[in-house]
Image (cartoon, rainbow, N blue to C red; front, side, top):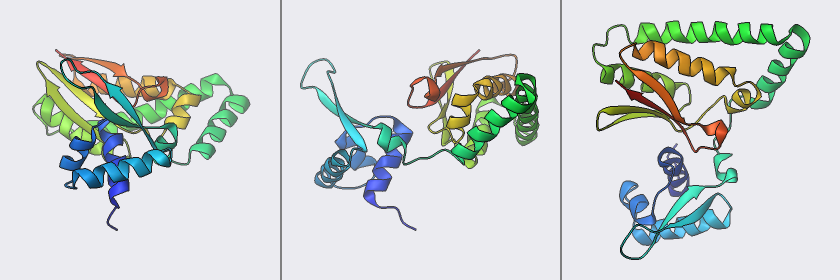
Length: 206
C-alpha cells in the first residue's frame, strides 16, 4: 500500500531527526507549497513541532521534529507484554535470572550477526550487513562515514519499552557491536533514545 505524503514526512523525520520544509519537498519530490501544507496539518495534529535555528549570517531557519505523539506513530513491538514478562522474571526468579535471559539473547544475536558478516572483508561491508539486519528487525538502521570515523545509526528502537525497563539490553547491544566490529576499532554510543535522544548513534573509530 502506497504511503500518504504525511506518512512519508513522518517517516523522513524519524529517519533524519530534523528537516526544513525545503529539504522535505526535495527529498520526497513534492512541491514546496505541498510540503508546507502537510507540515502545518501535522503540527496542528500535534505530531511535529517547529524549531527555529540561527545558522550564522541571514535569517534563522525553521526545522521540524517529531513530538512525543509523533514518535508514538512508531510503536514498540509488543511493548506492554514484554515489560510485564520482564517484571515477572525479575519478581519471581530474581535479578540474576533476568541477567541470564539477557546474556542468552546477546549470545544468540551475536551468533546470528557473526554468521551474516562472515564473508565480509572491510568495515564498510560489515556495517552494510549489520544495518540491513537491524533494519529487518525494526531498528531503521543506516551507516555513514565522516572523516576517519564511521557511524552506525538506529532511527527507531522496537524494544524501547523493554530497554527502559531493563537497560541490560542496551549494554548487551553495545557489547555485541564492539565484538562484531573487531578489536581494531572502538565503538562508542554517543546518542541514546532512552536517554532522550532522537536515535541511537554508535561512533566507530580506529
